[in-house]
Length: 379
Image (cartoon, rainbow, N blue to C red; front, side, top):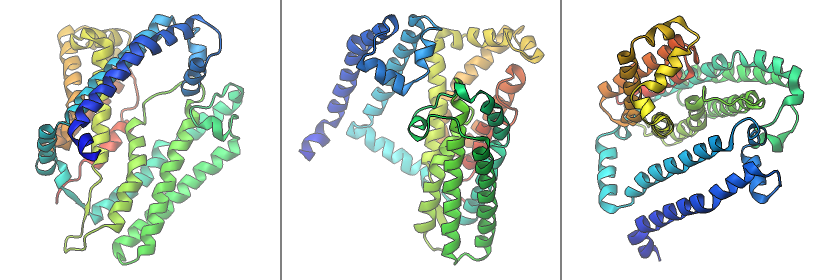
């Protein structure tokens, strides 16, 4: 059985991809149409509203064709991405990819223990700074708590919006965790034999990560979901595993190197790549020729953005470069530090530019904060 799977894994995956597309285009798509044109409660409507509760309201705000187009794009994107991934199950391609990751990427690099604990301190303090304005926002939300619709699994925890006391206590606890974690990280740098310090640091990182993501979820319970913290959330998810692996599997040599968690590199690269692909699949030629970006700039609330819209060639150039940069961000995995630093520099310019020209996000975006984790390579 195992031999059969190894020999035919590519064809099995290809068959599953084909089956998923067949089910969508000939079954699920028809159910989706029926969902919008009927108020009857079916198993499909229950599944949809469990996964995406806001759709029950939004289906009365937008035409059905709008959502059908979105779901079609998701199906096409899934076909595109899954087909590429399936290629790596072909033995020859797999061997070449494996050779590349071993010899040509940052997978062959490591980060020193001192730098690792610098990142721990940076992470803990960043969680406090990035969530600094949340308490003010959540305080305002308590006045409209009756409109709260919990997202995802939050409905299983509680269907009502927490009290202001809960939020105040949670943010105080986050700051206490930060102080404790920072203090013990500094102490560990001087007393590296103290494994108790490692345990305390790891618990502080884990609690800080859980609290940051958990409190963030309440911001999206009033009909607005955004991707401001998309990359930073991946840091919260993966850093505890990175630190855990580094703490307990370190090789005690003179340089005392610790393996890097390159899933973080991969996750961030894939987020940018998916953002670029989304522009292509949704905007099509409008993003490639600059028309989509031009439309955003013409309606920009900033004078800089409106002024830039008067130069169509520059808009076309920036739009094309954005697509190229986002879809090629996976090159962050390459061990050539000049490629890595160039991508990071362009990323900083991109996010700062989006803020000043379109008033989206912040001039010091959380997406930029993540770049610190991408700077460290082989010593």
